[in-house]
Length: 79
Image 1: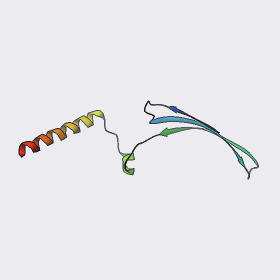
Image 2 (image 1 turned 135 degrees about the vertical axis):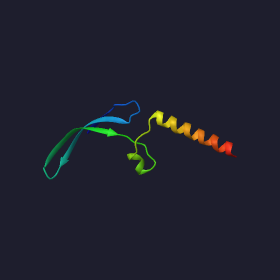
Image 3 (image 1 turned 90 degrees about the vertical axis):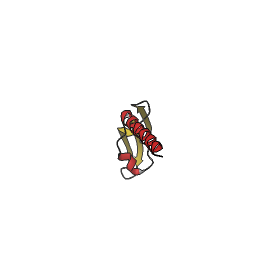
Image 4 (image 1 turned 90 degrees about the horizontal axis):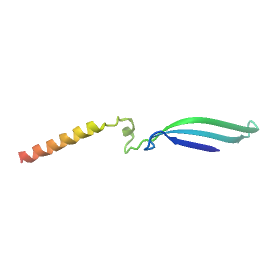
């Protein structure tokens, strides 16, 4: 049995996996050789629904950060 992984992105989020498995099957009274290629996506999440959310672009994150800063300043001036 052998498996080879090749990272498509530097962070390892997307990978290709080539594999070959040799297994003895009693039912067939012989070896079955399985060879294949797979595409692997690695996702970090805290909640299951986070898997299906779109990732924010750096511009969106910067806009949200700026909006939070403005909101904090406006609440300070109201006090």
